[in-house]
Length: 278
Ligand SMILES: Nc1ncnc2c1ncn2[C@@H]1O[C@H](COP(=O)(O)OP(=O)(O)OP(=O)(O)O)[C@@H](O)[C@H]1O
Ligand SMILES: [Mg+2]
Image 1 (spheres, rainbow, N blue to C red):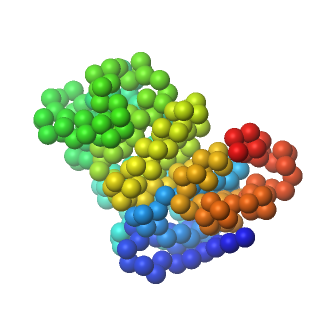
Image 2 (image 1 turned 30 degrees about the horizontal axis):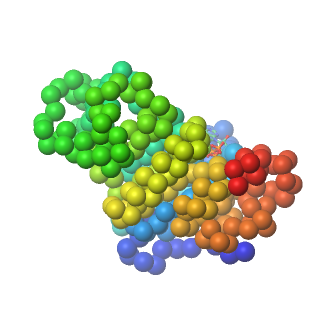
């Protein structure tokens, strides 16, 4: 088994450098424990691990939705570990993120939802986002939004209300909205967990396409090991807040899977899902 617990970035081309970060929540839970990772533009990283392993906490630290309690985070050479206020909003804008729940504005059209991504791009303060949604958008902004919808293959749905779409379509809108931010990194926290297999495949293909066409890193938390194997150029295995595996899909054999999810087949949480989908 290839096991890389900690490696420091040596390559200046790295987009993200995670240097020995830990996260201890105020209630004492140590959700991340000394995690290091260097991420480049050609990376498509699948992060796997049991429920509670720290996958979401890790992605949320990366875009500074939460602040690590130890260690350093660097985005394109800039230390973002402790940024606040406007600088913090800029950091979040530079990282597109999607979630299992799509978090769309249900009563707005698909196009308006994507334009919310442009507002994040332009607005000086979060308060303006809500107000500005009612204003007339310049044609150039709409063109960007349409391009993003084209990239995810649903430009024909632009004028439909978001809450009339299927789950797979809504996730594609969420991806288009994140793309409209012109992100330098794309993060996805269990983006296919609530989708049927065909929609899941479509969403994973779109994420792969984003990585390849835009040459930005994509990091995806996944519970389905078969998707992690097929799409992850690198796979990170997390357990109890630590990275216990880093390697390629071909390295992900039964021993490695046991080391990530625990040895008792079917008893460890998360393992059933792997067996079913694998
Ligand atoms: N805000 C918080 N306050 C306290 N503990 C938290 C908080 N958020 C997460 N945790 C804890 O941190 C640990 C890691 O949680 P996290 O959500 O990152 O796991 P996960 O790998 O994403 O799990 P899942 O696969 O179920 O989504 C868990 O023990 C969780 O209960
Ligand atoms: Mg999670």
